[in-house]
Amino acid sequence: MKKYLAEIQQFYRDNADPANVAKYARYFIDGYDAYGVDSKLSEKQLSTWLSDWNSSLSWDQWLDLADLLMDSPKYEERMCGIGFIMHQRERFTPDLADRVEVWYSKGWIRTWADVDVSATQVLQPLLLDGHARLNQFKSWLTADSIWQRRAVPVTCIGLIGGQMINAGGI
Image 1 (tube, rainbow, N blue to C red):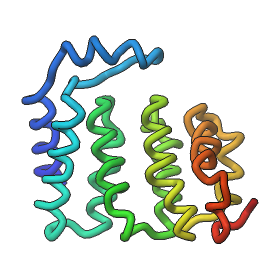
Image 2: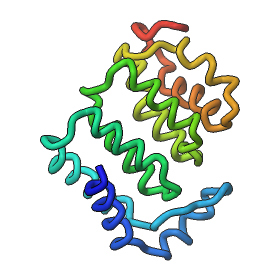
Image 3: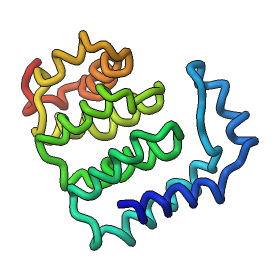
Image 4: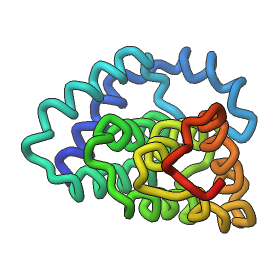
C-alpha cells in the first residue's frame, strides 16, 4: 500500500495550486487543508489509477488504501479514498457500511464535502442495492460526530421518491 499512497501523495504535491486553496477555502468554515489541485485533473487521475491498479489490487486492498487516504488531513486525499470506493459499486458488500462507519467514528470524515460525497456516493448506493438497511443507521442519529449524524439525512435525501422499495426500514 505504501507505494500506491506515495504515488497519490506525490501527484497531489506536484499539482498543488495555492490559488485554488484560497479560492475554495471560503466554502469550508471549519477549515480547508488542501493541495488545491484542479478537480478535473484529480478526477482524470483517479480514473487512471483505477484502471492501472485494478488488476493489482483486491477489493480488500482498495478498502485498505481508502482507509489510509481517509486518515489524511488533506481534502483531495480523502476525496480520492472515497472515489476509489464509489467507482467500484459492483464490488459493494454489506460490510462496507461498517467500514464507512469507521471513517466517521475515527474522525476521518471532517468536512461537509466529506459527508455529502460519502453519503450520496457510497451509503446511498449500499441502500439502493440492498447491501444495507436504513435501520443500520439508526444509531448514527445520536453519534458523537456531527458529521456522522448528518450522514443519515444526506443519505436519505436521494431516496425520496420511491427509490427505497427494497431497502426496507422505512
